[in-house]
Length: 222
Ligand code: AMP
Image (cartoon, rainbow, N blue to C red; front, side, top):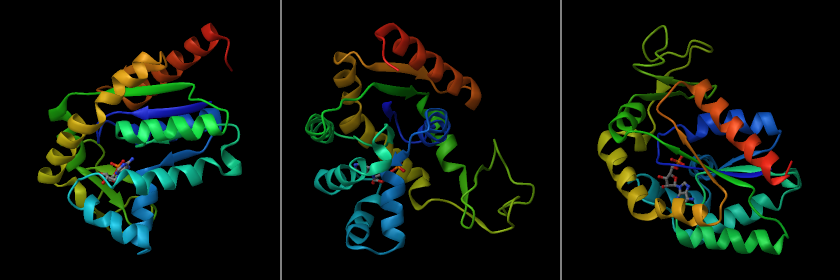
């Protein structure tokens, strides 16, 4: 299964990607995670990417395309992968098509998640992360027992720099301007499945799986 998960920031792509990639036993590849790691390690890519990420802008296509090209050629991607947060522009989508055809492969499905914008702002601005073990929380929906402290490891929780309201609004505008067109791009290729992400996490995951399996069975793919 070569999958891609698409939708505005904060719609729950990462959460669903973890679940779906486990079911299909394929690596979950998030360009946001790769870039954040590069920023943390102060690599050349990280230093460059940080200028854009801090403002909620997109990192230049050339940078992320190279990252993904290298990543999907890895051995662990031979049986598929789930891309999360890439592509985000038409240029990236076309570059991905080129790499896929060079590798004699293609995307099986693109999962589009959608939700109400005000709900997305609440989700993102309330999101907190454990600096130590990586567990996710939400100040309202998934609060830790003790404020700002991880239930599992006791470390301090923090907020992603780009989860403040001003930057969240900018990220949503960037999505509308640059990424939304990809929905039509993949719809025309007949590989898009759309799922309402304004519901419980497991309900959403089940619907994604149902839609993927149904379509796979109909088209005779595994
Ligand atoms: P995410 O974790 O997917 O919300 O990504 C966080 C930030 O990383 C984005 O706001 C962008 O600055 C950058 N980023 C992640 N993926 C891409 C991409 N495919 N193209 C450009 N920038 C990206």
